[in-house]
Image (cartoon, rainbow, N blue to C red; front, side, top):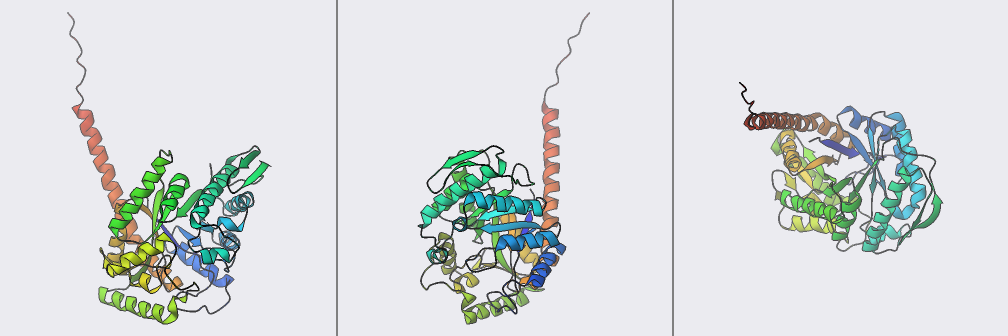
Length: 383
């Protein structure tokens, strides 16, 4: 089973524990970070979406034109543009990147953040809109003849695009969420389903829920799964935990850099992270929830702490659950991307390759035994 690594395509050097040193869109830093990922074994980078951040589609196009080979994950919120417009943007970006685009659809977990750009739908209404939006995008990417659409949120007549993706039949669709409405929408439409880093048992439960939703939607396949973490690595366990507690102190001191209203989070994913954190800081092999608690369960916020070998082993535990895409982002965005690429990714890839070889050998032996056990047809004797 293949394994892929997703990093972050940031536009400046700021993080939750350090203010940025330059503009929001620092072009030199953006390329430096993207090239660091490309040069250190990462498969793709995410260009995230925020109500006030630089437009990720244009940033992604800039990086795609300057860093050949690096794959792009573009985050998009359906409330910000009509689907017929967006699907042309995506197709154009897939042309610019020569087929390196995946689109991640964000339904939105905070009413406050959504209303910054005029979105007043309820959460469940947003999920229904996202599902309809994805269906339109898929059809627009593949239909060479005009089509109509009459839905709950969108209506148009006689649309056909004149720009199509390089990828056939279309780029992949990525989606995330931890509520029943999310499972239903993503299970039906997503090629990749994204989860935040929870303990292994809880992650397995979510994977099962998404698979069940996919079956309920009539799919004969299921999405691939992605899980996201904040790795904290060092040469020894002691140094890794010292580093982790320095990061935690900085998060608490900075107030986690959040600009959200006080009170519990609205989205199920953040609530789940806080519920896990309330049961204890350390779980399984290396999962640490103190960073999630310090940020109010803000997004990708649970850490994996330890030596590269420990963190790699923890990631392989998730791989054993069926997680094929491992998302990681440190608190020193550039430095951690390099260190993780140098010291963790090779261990995981080597072990996955070893397991694949062993699985292939077991399959070969089983096939030979099955063949040997089949009775040979007897040739009748004649006189």
